[in-house]
Length: 186
Length: 89
Image (tube, rainbow over all chains, first blue to last red; front, side, top):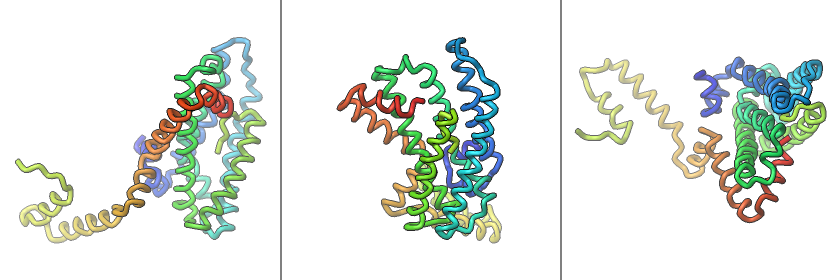
């Protein structure tokens, strides 16, 4: 629990501690929220929504694959920019930055299912606006910290890696949306 | 009783107290305090960076709240609906 709170509040220290169980735990909860929680929420909101078990299993596997792919992208791009960090370390640590991703998958599950309640509502609109923009900023801060702390990149090299990996993140987010992962596992 | 506002004041008081610690313990404690004090940012940008990186959600959601209030006041539900349709699944 203490390690999870450290990942939430003091990500620099958490990345320094390199606790792979925190990383993988956060990734697993994020994927399950996307693939299991959201369909069940939809089913309980309206029983006409069917629970498609094979599809749930498929997107769970694709979620895990996305995590491995984004770690490979980090490894290759950062290596190009001079980082000496191993692929295994990216796999063991990138998940530490998944608190905003997890929060996003919970929020998206509710906005997806109860869209009609929140649409055209100033109060709900502002609440979700704060959540979505906040999550985006939070993840960006963690992304920069990660490039500095784990990849060991600074200044121009870090900006270069930030832009190139950012492009891959956009592509992978689109691919995730295409296969049914509404919150990208990134 | 005097209130101690500066944490270092208490540490140095302890270091000066001959009866409490051995010389080795004092040396170890002093090294730790000096090492920690080097990590403390003193420049303006250093402090801003530390404010962002420690509790990053605090920076993220306060900035998000400021923009949400400002843009919703200007554009109304058109703005909130736009973001909801884009991010909301």
